[in-house]
Length: 281
Image (cartoon, rainbow, N blue to C red; front, side):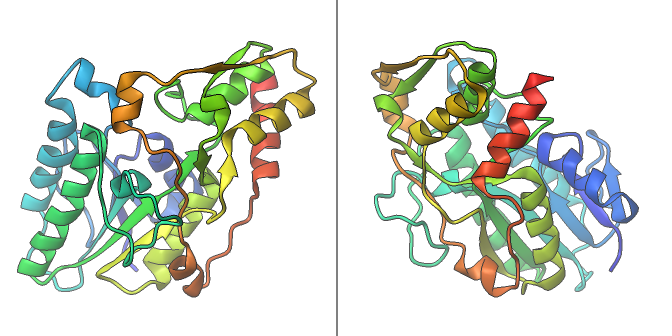
């Protein structure tokens, strides 16, 4: 296998991937749109649905326009080229039937981030089918892990709340924390991506997650117990914007990922323990 050209190598997942596989990656500079090999891993993306309040263009510019600049610079005649695109469970959107399955679940994304990620998927598929180029699309669950410097109430909210609990601050939960989500440790995510790049067939959409439904409140209570925190849980009513764009429950069907031979190394207990240790420092 040729080295992997990594677009988005400075982000949370991209930097972790490059640190795990330093000998086989080419980190592509931010302003460089030309891959250095025919094995491409594309992670450039915005990170949440809240840009609509400040900048109506940034999700389109980042998730679509930059992607088009990269597609313009790949060798369309290289039949060995594979374009591996990192997407998100957010593309499933408001879909009441869980777990989300790559073939059976329809996509109903809400919010500019979610919509543009789904649009990017479709444009990649159309482009690759037009020029007979191989592709894979990875739809990630919620990714947790040390080194995410952009956690907030808007992005990676659970990890933000775990940090608040470690620091003995009260935490506010919508609907008393009843939301169900699928959480995966960043090392497992990177290993799953690499495993699929090595073993999964091309021209596939693949869910990457734990495949287990976790209740947000349960994880917060577990963190409070493990840390003997003085944090209190405060139930709050969701905002109008939250009702418009957020999905109540989501987790992923990972039977396809498992069929390719991948197994997670970290369960939710390990993830919580690692984050507690990290934030206590």
